[in-house]
Image (tube, rainbow, N blue to C red; front, side, top):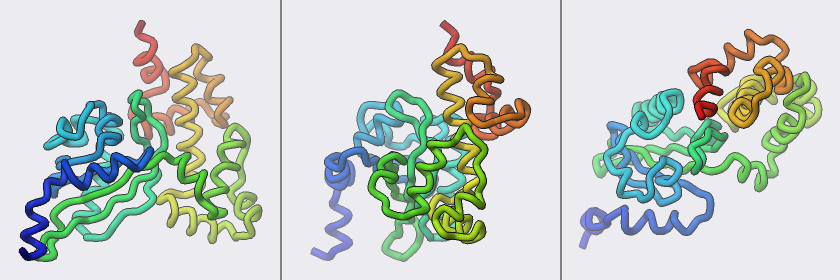
Length: 242
């Protein structure tokens, strides 16, 4: 039997997925050219809000995720499908099992058919915290410094000097590793922490903004809306209806 014929006999939902189900804290997915989910492992399914991978088949991102997440995922899919090149180490918001947004690292790779044409996408999603715990890269480790001091003024040139790089070198390496700039990462981290406080407390919004490193209320609202596509007040009301 030829290799292509053998591959056609494989049921990915009952073979490849089983491997990923035995790798702790790692999500795996496959999409077709229309960005419809073909399969995924159980961990991925549960983060998508369903119980089993079978419930994901044929579903689209806009059916499973908030609009601001879905648009980002679809835009990245289109880049991979158009270029045939992977997108690696994407730092992005993804739902936890409790459907709360947290930072994850996504790897997206093209899949090719027998004719060499891009026919879909496969990828993994992994906790951002896990990457920090295993990496020895000083640029990755620098993120912990940012996390420890997010509420204080953070100087990108000083961050660069702390690991022996120029600001331009840091920005290039940060962009290559996380697909975002240090400044954008700092803002995103502050907004995410602020979203936790909005969700879990009754602290005044202005006070939350200041405690997360935003000293201009209008700037906080602008950055928050850019990520969550809603205002801090509207976001809070979603979780305080009862």
